Length: 323
Image 1: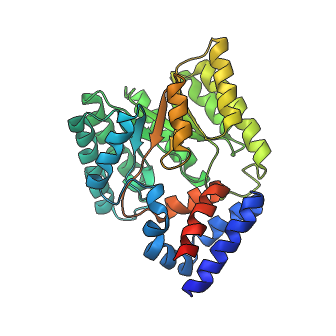
Image 2: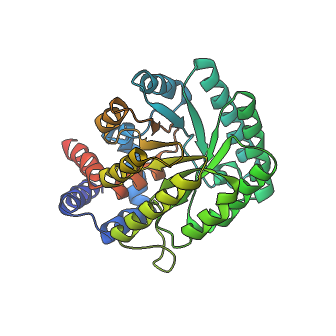
């Protein structure tokens, strides 16, 4: 079975090196839920390349990585990998882990913040549970002059996530932001609804498998909507995180910045992807944050990274072939 998985990964890598298309991306995301794929990747993944995208399987392993990124002039956010807990006690346990992470960032003097998923804090169980847990962490972060980013998940979670974000802001919590995804048709209206809050938002393209009825299937349309939304955010937000490795989009934002008339922003990128480009942007005077997750539950994160870029698949496939 292992040899078969190796052959399939190698073939996928060769195919995607020629072109990245929606069919391939969908294939990777569908394969994510395949039992054989999960067993193989969990068994060999960290050794075959997952460690390129994950700072470690524990906080102790992650802290030196975060400090080294700071040393190079990069800000960080960190995430305990995992999502969709279905037990209230587990959600409370994850919340306690995040409380420890927040304190550790303060104690180590790390320049960065925490990003988290509400389903990791209990949203799948009960929205009130998730709200109580996130509010606890937001209050703790505020006491340390720190910030928390609420990540966006699949489309079925958008309404609950935005409702909790708005509720936090209406309760007076300003040290919290969230994320919008440019591949969803609904996002422009979601942004317009958030503008009265002068929000702190991260803009991403989107990494979940969504039907064409609610999301643009073509990359060109996703990119065009990204630029449109980025312009709206830069003109209206209290802060805008441009989360992309796309040089055309980054160039567009750089030109807008030179023209003036926009609010504060930073570029955000993923740990392990184009690290030299990240440093080049810092050298050019831009603020850059690197999303640097850790934890043992790295599988779904890794598979989404493989689906996003052909270079990621090739990197993983080459390591598989070397075994």
